[in-house]
Image (cartoon, rainbow, N blue to C red; front, top):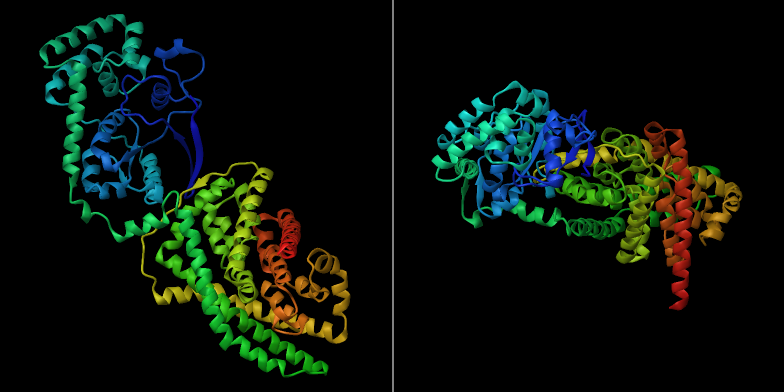
Amino acid sequence: MAYKRCTVQIGMDEAELVDLPAIRSLHNLHDDDLEGLKYLLWGDSRPLVSAHEGELPPAPFSRPDVLIHLVDASTLGRHLELTLELIELGLPIVIGLNMMDEARRKGVSIDIEALEKELGVPVVPMTAIKGLGISALFEQTVAAVRNGVCPVPQPAGEHIAAWSSQLHEALDTPELHDAFRVPRTFLMMQLMQSDHYFSSELKCHFPNLTNAFELIRGKADAALPRTLADEVAADRHHRAANLFASAARVSHRSKTITWEDRLDAIFLHPRWGLVGSLTVFAMILFMVFEVSTGLDAITAAQLAQMAEQWVPESTGGVIGHAVIDGLIGLIGIVIPYMLPLVLMLVTLEESGIMPRIAFVVDRFFHHIGLHGKVAVPFLLGLGCNVPAIAATKSVVSGRDRVVASLLITFVPCSARSAIILALGGKYLGGIGIFGIFMLNLVIIAILGKLLTRRYPEISPGLIQDIPAYAMPKIQPVLHATWHRTRDILTIVTPLLVGGSIILALLHHFGADMWVNQLLAPVTVWALGLPVVLGVPILFGVLRKELSLLMIYQALGTFEVGSVLDWVQISTFLIFLMFYVPCVSTFAVMLKVIGRKEALFSIILSIGVALLCAFAVRMLLEGSRLIL
């Protein structure tokens, strides 16, 4: 039997999950199903009765500490029969009551507390395909292992209880229990149902006890309306039906579907959820673009027109003008572009939509070889790469932390998104912006595949929790938005103003031409850009926002479209999207993944940026010639 195993991180605990084949009963099993039952009973320790089956143990690992029984809540009555059998195994059990949404659609309402009380085991309502209840299921599982309490098998019906007692007396010998090494109730039930495996082992190893057993079973078959095996099955079915009747009720279908269910049908659909998530981000970009255009027109654009009227000639005047340009650039980035984007992302998080998007994106990360737990840091990266990389430290470790950190540097943070929106939105349109972001997604997927091959070790999985929907409250949203953008005042402003002054002085004294000439192989030959953009590209490592301001200064105008054509703007934006992360991002990478991997990140980003920008430039140039 090929066991499916995976390691999962549950808080501070690490557990190994073993997935067994789905079965409907524990008696008369064959092939892989029987091997699965042997694993539940004996693990890697072979009992005396199966010593003749070979030298290898029944399973390659020890008997489980706890059993998670996943039950379809929409057909609970049928599954409770198996639950009653599993309780006889003598293991702690946690029931995952899955597909609760389907149960509600069918009008089935389940009293969880009543079911727990009747069975004597924890019951966790969940909808696994939507990520609901999974975290609670594993929390209950860890608690069950620590408590070490096994549920007590429920007594059989009165009409078979007497025969069960007789069999217990006839077969209750130390030699028998030592040989089978299974719970007594379970062994009696298997023999009473004439299970092929246990009956044959009893006959092979204990012929005398087999004769006594056959005598009692023959009397039972004659006295009961049906055979003893059929009566045991009927009794279990009757007890399961009573359990269902005491813990569940059926209501009208129309009363069971809530607005949360309808929203989850959009965001957590197994096939269309990813499309829905991409649609949400496309709408965000569109809304930001529409809002930003208006805000830019009444803020930075007017300030820029006023500043262009002043052309200083002295060194002091140049420095003063540079300070003003830096502040105008800050206003032009933060107010129209960064604030609306961060505000919308925070609103999605507070409403509960963003965690659902993270759950859906989980499949994407598994496809490229990572656990879905990295989805949350990646989504944080849309605001800023610095807290995103720092977040990987708390949710992943080892290989996943390194790969996730390397990939997060390619996630378009709010600063890079602001530049793309500012230039792309103005000169490339909505389709151009969407194309750039889709290219970014494709590159991340390809790099993920390549990097997971470079780091082949597997890290333990982590359980994602999905909160309930909530109406975003103004104060928490504004507080979170300020928390994510406050570094603008303390970090970005000095860098923008300082970089603007340095660039202006380099230009004032003619020293910028030397830097531009050194970078000409990149700017002119590879990217097809004006040579004067070398300095803005170089200073982009301080902050991405600085590149946009320096473009304006290097080109001598805020109307970039009058100097660069659409191919050059596209090439520059793609290069800037993948280009070396800012200094603050590099600094946090040193702490999270170490110097070696942080330096590798720089080499990787430069290579990817040059390759992608050059390829897109050639493609666009070719299409322009054809058209």
